[in-house]
Image (cartoon, rainbow, N blue to C red; front, side, top):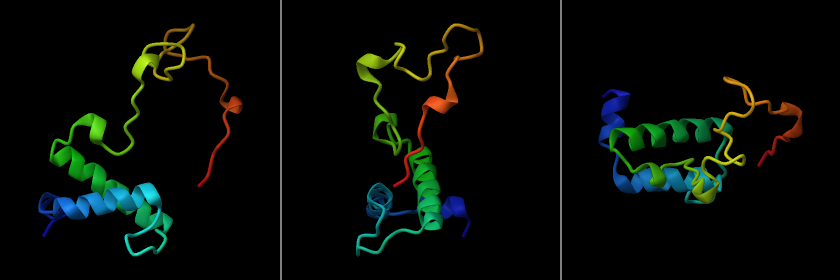
Length: 97
């Protein structure tokens, strides 16, 4: 069985459990996900969502920009220079869970 066949046949309940485990950082039985387990689970969930045409707003990692879309608060908006965004990368702090 290929990876694609496995994801294609993945039970929707298993998909939901994987998605919830990624969100909480632990398996349904309470054991903590390792970084590698989180990575593999996230890849499987993203692949499942693409394969099964899950609506964008229901996908893992979706950010609703709402009223901020297209404004200076939207990081996808380019500022001042064509092709550049003039953002100082030193102003951001990495947050680890």
